[in-house]
Image (cartoon, rainbow, N blue to C red; front, side, top):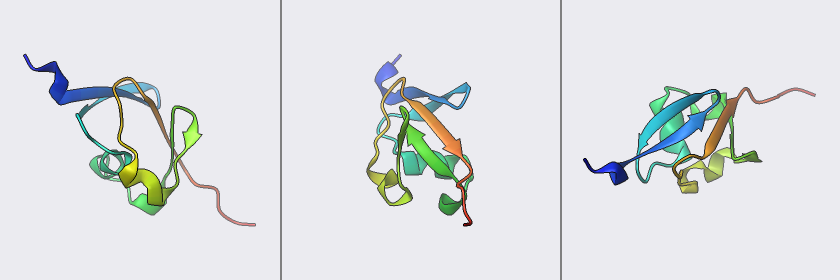
Length: 72
């Protein structure tokens, strides 16, 4: 079995398998979220929406999706 073709990330409180080379933008789309509907962080570091496509995910990273805070 080729174990290099997938990675596993911890998404909130569960494990999520993804194809190797997936980006944070790929994960948001895979889960069916509109890009502007969620905030994202990887390993405790906020990742702005415009940087998600460049954020390649690695095996065992922790990913957090959250509702963005808006208003004043």
